[in-house]
Image 1 (tube, rainbow, N blue to C red):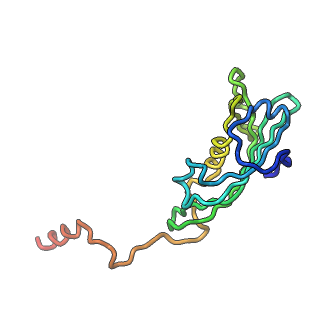
Image 2: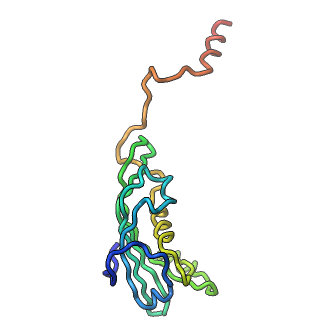
Length: 173
């Protein structure tokens, strides 16, 4: 997803921004984040190595609504649910987030029709959790290689079924 060029140098994720002010001023930030800093992803990943590039741009539309355009890209190492081996998943997230003040009505009908999401506008909007949430939402439910086989066990590795004894007993009766 392509967004406006950042007005500041590539940087780490700031702790927080004032969402409405950021959007009203048309600010833009970009940087990178270590995958290991995204702790909620740990259960979904095969390894926590690498970095993700992020960009966030604020804007106001003709109606005076404030928006954040968030982009995250990179690669994640997921575990294939078929063969259980690691696999690389390309990530290219681009979302448009309408900032809604706590006292404003939620635009549910517009969201369904126009393909955007809404979030509550905060004075101290934490960016790292916002980035992590969008990455989590972009992950496949059951990641799989294009072509792979389910893991198999060798015949000598299989333990006898506990019911095999009952089958033998039944034959003897």
